[in-house]
Length: 625
Image 1: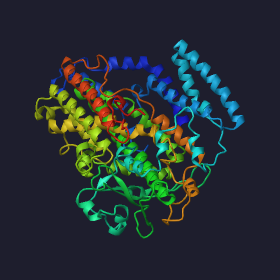
Image 2: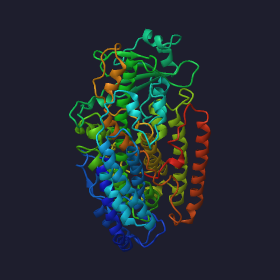
Image 3: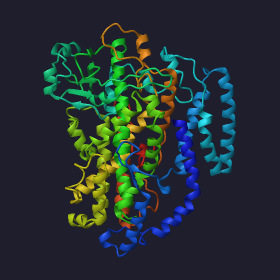
Image 4: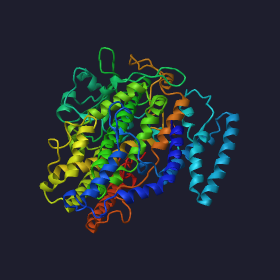
């Protein structure tokens, strides 16, 4: 999938280069004459404004068949396609993947010689293109990457940890390789990993998970299940949504497996961090026994934790990442271009936060979540059931769920006195508040009261279109079919910008140093989950893991996806805003982000491990990878 995606990227970049002049001509003919931001009710050039929107609606049209009834753009317009600079970043990450494999002495000898010749030729051409500063030569290199990245199959079977570790040569062996069997690390991933969005506080377990007081006290002898629940120290990771996934097969035809487990955690009295208590590997207690906390590398317990990791990885990829960032944002991108003129203040504010989103989503729907793509080959389910879970994840995600403070409260994880150790929450709230302040200050320049909001015909058309085309959030977005208040508008824009920047960063970039390591985070199981809590061996654990060829594919895909940082939150570029009144609010926003960077650095000095995914310097402006 990575290779075909890169090929498509290269062709797209060539197409973009050939159309830049046409695009400039199109903009000059159709943009409103005033470059100064104006609400439609204040713009004397209303006819030219309407003409611009009429043309934009021809370019940005909806398709509801690419991903099962969700609204995506029919064809990505020229000016929304990948930029050359983006493509070169992807190429750089891909080259590192190439070098990582070429440096591996465990490849077959014949394959090594073939690869060496390709690598030398590639390096020579890269040097020549760089010296000549030739864009066309660089684009040709990107187009050739799929061929260059092809490697001979490995003879390794994945029977011990060294074989997985030996996949890393130029790409460093990630730090999680040192403690992936640790119970502390297993718990830490729930609050600071790639999917810190599932854990929820509970007061008691329901009938699906019949853990007894006696079982709980085997793990925490001086505590009580009932007391822990009453005191807010009981937390559950529930993957019920994955019951809909049907296990697929991997390329050589063997069956893949996934469960919908329940994992219980508690904060021991007098402590601050979660500890795992028990795991049930499915929603039905009659067919799935309860595994109790053991030493981290005890085989049965390690296998149970790994089944949870498989579930968490699939939930992450299909729901938290693809569904609730990429697909959630797309209707806002399309509606913004169709309903807001290019000199509308909201268009100007939002456009940088949508850069590359339509292009990467189009690549995802045509390559990543298609038959034979990365989801099909690497994740656990059939492509049909995987897509269905993503769609369900979008349609059940109400707009208020994207409002971070409300989302945290809904899961019962908003109170740091109850859950002190939650790096994602604490850092995300800093960024949320910074974006919210920036948005409110920006809006105050153009809207003086709620009446100005109601009179903004383009804004109301924008809201109406999102409600009609948002893929399931129609009952929750807006205020009775409109946007009626300045306060709601500020919350809505904050949610969209936060999701497209910080939220996506929080779920995307951990791939590059966590999911790359298959023994810690497998994307599928290759033996059925155990039905007995004793009797497993280390060999059973390695049989559960993806084969080495699958681990190689997982490393390639997730390293590239987790390594491309294109643009930086708050950096709009010199001269982007033409309104002088924006200068101070923007400077305040940027200063606020710098202060957050320092605050996170200080927090990391006191944490068990650094949490860097929400440092503003590591948050792109938009979903573009």
